[in-house]
Image (tube, rainbow, N blue to C red; front, side, top):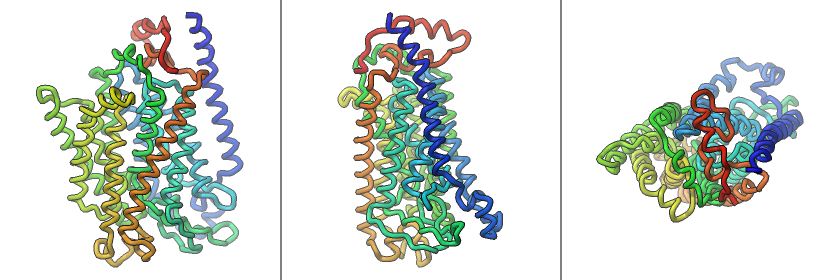
Length: 497
């Protein structure tokens, strides 16, 4: 009981100080390094004598809007299924994403888009920052309700750095090649903006490196990385006495409805998520189509399996909210490849069924046998489908030929090194597989380090008896306040250490 005033005082100061520190540091770094790119800078854009219709904004911003809505509305509401943690789900999603967008702009900029000692930003850098935020929110889902906001901000701080490094290794270092200056406005697949820009001095920038591992929609770099980072983090933060909060861990009727709103947001906008970073033209069109059909098939597969394995043949809302989205995850890597509409349907149906079976059978095993407490089931929605998507990319890369992609520039836009003869399709497939292994390594090591960081004793986290409860960190209004305050008046020793 004597700990309560000290803990409350620490909680009052901890989050404000950390927010101010992080915002101040990022603001200083922005002032020192971040500049508009040539399509955003007034002087550089008009100096190039371009038509306004040629500006990248008009091609990329519609996709950015969709991805942005997915990050803030889709992920936030999808995690609002817990009966007493709606504020935390939506509110901490808001906090984490807002910080990650700034921090990832810096990290990705230092690794990918430094020109003349400056980070150049535009609409494509906004999309890339949203992708990083998506990975952080996936990890958040694994520890939802069991961590405090200060812990979550530190998790985002570390994970964003490792996300950027992993992406840099996959897209640039696996078989690195030098860019060629003066290539004009060619697209580079998973681009960090258009390449071939002319600087203020009239000299062309070095063009972006051709992506060495293809992963436009992020089956590996976003979903697999975010899921296994979060799962290893959750394992390190394992709470053997979490049964004390078991009564809050479930959903109620209206909380499941809110979560379904998140599902619909994600489902509708997922074709934009996968296609946003791809090169303009047939690749982007193909990615949207493959994602569209894969999602429809995963939805039917989810409904079928949910009824089949459900009690008395009844559907489970947990399955519908989550596994129906697995079709978007599974075609993240192969979406821009010649997957074919049939292949997209088959992949989506497989992902939906595997995800549903994971929620039904594998989640209890994870906790009982491996001591991994996965609040949102990110292993079933992002982990397993992400790995399947990476393996689908291996298969599609191995089948990439000039005959399949035609004699035009389609193969060059998807597999540039295969198109020019520097790799065979088989070697590209091996690189894709190696990329999956690298991602799993970064995610596992990073999650372990993150777990050790979050276990520092001065970081406030809820006691075992107070997990999944908004009242710990939020003012709960009206009639719920007395009900919520009741179980929080007495604090018990917990198992966080």
